[in-house]
Image (tube, rainbow, N blue to C red):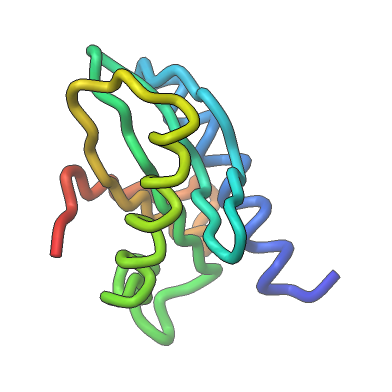
Length: 117
């Protein structure tokens, strides 16, 4: 398995653990519809959170959150629309980015809540 795939999988595992510790209920991970994927779908305080996880081993090429492009956000919106058709009834939906930097002995987490275009 290539290094970036391993980093991504480790980041998503750490993200799920961190979010659970912060009171999020993880509903699903790596949900796919066609070519769209959502890393984590969770809920907390009656809010549905659609979460994109970005992880990097260093900040040499920028912070992880800097790699979330407008195109990526549009893909997340498309994927979330499919999930919401399948699982309707959510009154409040929020799109978040969880950036994780792994270059230290303790991972560094940065949650950007309620992202929009």
